[in-house]
Image (tube, rainbow over all chains, first blue to last red; front, side, top):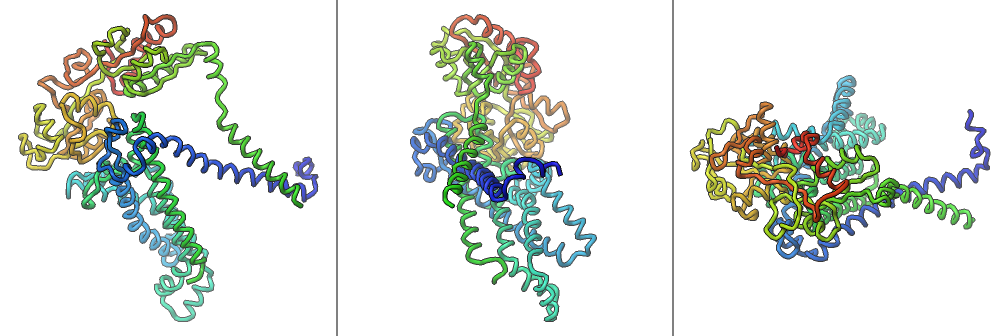
Length: 300
Length: 282
């Protein structure tokens, strides 16, 4: 090979190793630095609002009317935070079960040819842009819900669209988790005379538990951050919903709807939304980390 | 071996900051344009800003080396910055107040807002009181205004949108009193929402609504004070729910500033004006 003659490859292997370590360290530093810079940027941009409005008022003000200045406006984030958590939780409840069952189907029940096609469909689903899901929700799902209970744009519509979007994430990761379960477990279960259902749900699922947990956590993070589709179907009214047919506003929708026109304290308040969202995701990931450490892969 | 290890850490941090710095390095051309004094700064209304930044881009292409810098901050900031000499041109989305007569104003477009319903809604017109009543929740069923027996779905714009300001100012509604069922962002989303819900009422820019209706979207534009809602009526100034978008300068414009203002008023940018749902001035 031509590159064998390059100077780099004629160096002693120890030197080469050191260079490799240096390079990978540098790249790791850059990735870490990006996250740190994002956090610093968010804090910097939201500082005026945190200073003038005060962190407490974001949780005690009753409504969201941030266009007036800090003293006259009201900056309640609780309804939007509740909206974000409810849509994500609902979507996870729906997509978590469906995704894990769909992975169990492809791996243990479906005929091989069908499983191949099915997996392809799920992968395709993961590639559909979020705005397409939103458009479908707006044109098909919302009028359908409106026929039952107007106005249609609601928490329910948001949950369904979000569930569809995170379903492939759950299904693909759950499938990978099932694949990682040692083949011996399955054969041993069969040798003991367990039915297929019992071996899947009593042996494989518990063994793949930490992998399934990761799947759900990653999907939740995606659900929390999703913007476009949710904005199109949720109604975006800043109010705590009293039922699934009530409209909700999420934190991401607030940022997307208002950023283009915001200025002064309003703009800074939107960065506070971003900060709160980041905090929610951090808590989620930290919980997952802690839970993952408590239950190592493969143990019950 | 502690030394090589230390060296590799130092090297890696140095490399990391180098890569980070490369990402932040400012473009050379901007600094150059500033030195040669060919930067035109515009500040003011966030309604006019998207329009002027598109026009500015086109202007920059025709005048290589010139940079048009558009910043938002509200009409009042536009007035203040022009007076203080911080900006060459101010952008204002309302008519000039009496104490602003010292400024030189140039109309570049009009912005009209109209109330829209689903095409199958039998209601043909609403009085101003009825519109205000619907938006503040005093009227919540179409049967109260001569329509079918169905609850009204109130579609409102998100906080900070200019159409919201125009709408609430005209109908004398306090934005805090609006009881909305759906909150939308841009005009397109509003039109799709109304088209998908037979019992919805909303308001959008006239340009966008007329374009939608002409392309088969099932919506209808309600007249206001008996004046039909159309781009034509906005252009000739008879439609009440509209306002003029201005550029202002502190002294009579000269040189490049004059050229940019002339360009923003010319036929050559009418397509940009229409694309942003504004109405070109005749």
